[in-house]
Structures are given as structure tokens and as C-alpha cells.
Image (cartoon, rainbow, N blue to C red; front, top):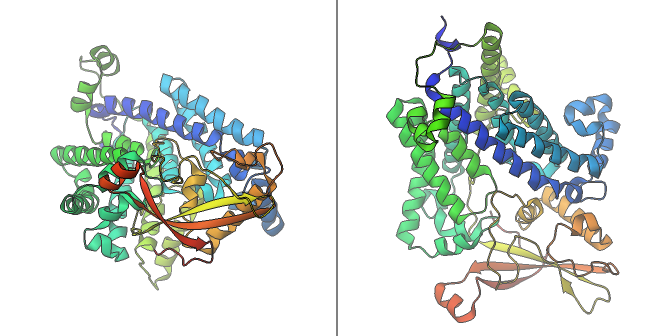
Length: 488
């Protein structure tokens, strides 16, 4: 019997728990999208999907379907966008209940991949591709964890962790090299929460030690994934512990939960069984000896093909990320395989926070009817009034608030969507203004004028907060975009 065809009975409980928790993450991701898609890419959104589809059709004809692989070619109305999100959430509940698991996972992956491409710049994030690839691999986990599927899931965790560390090392960023990244991170991350303020007050030596621990956990510990059991357990515990600390100090939607989930698959049933009630353990993994379960021959070849495909896509993507260049024709052809990664969202090379911002710039948008009296717009999650504590939003991903963080560097691709956003505010478009906490022109005449102020924000010290009650101090920089771009 080919050992690669065996179902690993040491990971049956781990796999069961993995699928249930993955269902919850998918549910949160789809519900998060439900209220945002119309305002972001709907018919009257910031970047309407229908406009992108028409541009691609004009340029590529029917080849546009390959350039933008999404189910929304059949229907791209606001109702279709929100319907897809609701359908995905319903499928996640079916997976949670153990009903039609493989079908539910397959349809969720297709729906989320469709949303990923439809969302354009608003969904061009690593946690979105991570969720898609995890969901795809989970389809082959339903009938039992084969060695090949576990290898692919471990390879995914390895890529996520090691390549994030490698990107920090290769970037040459002085804050990582000098172990000062955490001195800035809590204050300058896209969407801090109240825990970020407290973490920022920690002594510098502790923050430097934390930076060293992050680098160790990303550059060294990922190799423990492929070593004997005690190393895998250590890798799982340290990875999970760091993700819990990140959740306690940062708003990063569901990506840390997904990382914890992948790390759980490093723990076998001897450990996971202690987390589950006894009746559930006996039902899922009876104590009596059972015949060795194996994959059918067709299933084995499907798993083998999947393994070859993912390694064939991810390795070229990695070589491209690290800047490997070759003149050998067959190696160049092999590297081009990595170009399908953006289309399939599978085999991605991850690079989380390769550089660290050392200054926080915030944009404040104001509107006016007469050019004399100005009224500010308020966002739901990004820093605004200095007296309001930064809110906690995990596992929700407020994509507009998050994307505003990328605008101060003034790159052309960011200015494009931001200008479209301002245009929708000038129109007082309800689908877009519904993404905000406060629209000063709701239900009335739209603004005739808009302006954008740029501010430098920093956390207050404990003494400043005690005296003023403020969480932030801010310094006026001028009207955007006449202000200097934020670097990096």
C-alpha cells in the first residue's frame, strides 16, 4: 500500500476542528463584505465593477473572462454582489453544521474568488488570497487528512510565516534591522485599536525584544513545521501566542485567526483531543482500533496533481519575490507559472509588513455648500477626533477605512480610487456615504466644495491622556495633496 494514500488517523480531530473554525472565519469574511460591496464596487460605488468589465470587454473581447475570473460576469448588480455575500455566509453555516461539506467549501471558494476579483484594489490583500487557498485545500480535508493535504496546508503556513520574515530581511528597512519596528508599529499600523495605545507605552527594551521575537518566529520557527513532533508543537504554540498578542494590540481582520487555524493543524489529536468534550472525541475518533483508511486511487491522483500544481505555482512566485533572475529558457518558462497566482489566488508569496512606517498621517475630508462653513466627514474605524478611543473591529475588515491609510504616500494607483471616492462624496451618493460613520450632508443638498486636510498623528503619553482625556495628539500639515508624501 502506498503510504501517501493513507488517511492520517492522528489528525482526524484536528481536521474536524479545523473545518468548523474555518467555517466561522468564512462566515465573518462574507458578512463583512455584505454591507461594503455596493459602496466599493457596486453600480454607484467608488470603482463600479460594471465599468471594469466593459473596459476589459472592449480591450480583450471574450478573453476578458480569463482576465477577470468571476461569477459576476453573469450578473453584477448590487443585489448580485450582496446576494453572493449572503450565499457565502449561508454555505459557511452548512459547513459549520457538517452538511454538504465539500460542496459548501467549493462554492464558498468560488464565491469568495469572485468577490476577490470584483473588489479590485479594495480586495487586493494577502488575507483574501490566504482564505481562498485555505478553503481550496480544506475541500480535500473533509474525507480525512491525507499526508499530501497536510503537507500543502503546512506549506501554506510556512510560506505565510517565512516569506513575511524574509521580506523584512530583504527590504533593508532600518527599523527591522535595528530592532525598533515595534517602537513605531502600534502607532502607525493601518487601524490601531485601544490595545495599540497601551502596547505603545511599553518600555523600549521590551519592544526591541518583541521585534527580535517576531523575526525569530518568522525566519527560524517556520522550518520547525517540517521537523519531528516536539518541534512542530513548539512552532504551533509560539505562532499561536504571537497571533493572540497581535489581536490584542492590532486590528487585522481575520488574518491572525486564519494563521492560528493553520497552526492548529501542527497539533495532533493527542493535544487537540484535550480541547474537545469526551463524547465528541469518541464520536469523531473512536478508541477501538479501526482498519487503516486510505484514499481511493482517483482521490490519490487528484491530491497528487494538486500538490504538483501548487508547488509549481508557488515556487516561481517565491523566486520572483526574492528577485531571482535567470537567462535559462526553461527556468524562465517555469518562473512565468507564478504569473497565474493573481488569477487563481493560489500559490501566493506573502510579505506582511516588509517595511515599517515611522510617521502616521491622517486625512480629514470636509465638505461645504457655500465655501465658508465646512463640515467634516467621519469614518467608522480610522483615527479621527483625538478624544475618541480607536475601536476594535476584528474579524471585520472595513476596507474603505483601511485603504485611506495607503493614500498619504501619494502613489498614482491610490490617488485614482481616492479621487473617485471624493467624486462620490461630491455627488452625495448613498451607497458610498453609507460606509461612513457621519455624512454631514445626509438627506440634504450635496456639497459644492470638498477639501482634504493632512495631519500628523501620534499617540498621547499616559500623562497627556490623563490631563486631556485624548488618545491622540495631532499636528496640522496642510491641504492634501500639497503636503509632502509620507515615506515609506
